Image (tube, rainbow, N blue to C red):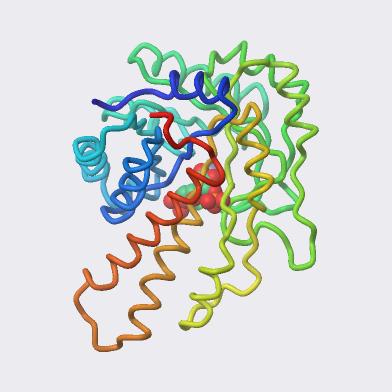
Length: 311
Ligand code: G3H
Ligand code: 13P
Ligand code: ZN
């Protein structure tokens, strides 16, 4: 099977009350860990690539790694650009084999966001590629853009219908209190998501697939391993998995996870190197990181997203 778009995946996920995991990929071990888990669990999958990932690993290497994963695993996979900042990067990914792109115009005014998103949609649709837009701003860091908690803003439900109509986007990322990175809430702060906003949005655009960014749950098991092996991640806090399960049952069809993979990989590598200082074969530590990535993705698919068996 070749790469697919997210259209069919989202239709089935919406109807079936589950969500598709969108996992960020940056190298071979991460691609392998994610796709082996999804392949064994017969789960549809979105692999997403940020501008930073393209800079690190090179567009062609990432596309070829994902193509290799398609050969090795008999599941539907969509290849998605995460947080495309402008038309040019979206065009480059569309022309370069991606089946889905995100144009993140959330830092612009409403009208500028509409114009930019519409331009990307027109080009993408002419090539059979689907587009995710964003309304509202998450806190945290994406590539070089840092949005402070004070500047983050929830999606305004009264804007979504006009945005979707005017742009023609295929899915919409919203801000309801999630944020990027491993430090999503302050110690002592009660994690909360604005499900009331999600509900209001769903009422206004029923049946339309919603995307949740910043959805890592930040496993305290991996934080502990990193801490015990020379790392410094005290106070890392993620989204409680109960809330993600609730989101997966709703109009949310795509749940973005990156930080959880970073923690899993880093915990594995740190543990091996700290406990075996004589090791210098990269395979000896990368394979442990890769296995951790696989374990995390399997857990997400079965216990959080509910997408196992839906391929
Ligand atoms: O939303 C951001 C993703 O976690 C990608 O992070 O831009 O550092 O690759 P990155
Ligand atoms: P996390 O930092 O919570 O993993 O979010 C990733 C994300 O939203 C990628 O677009
Ligand atoms: Zn994101």
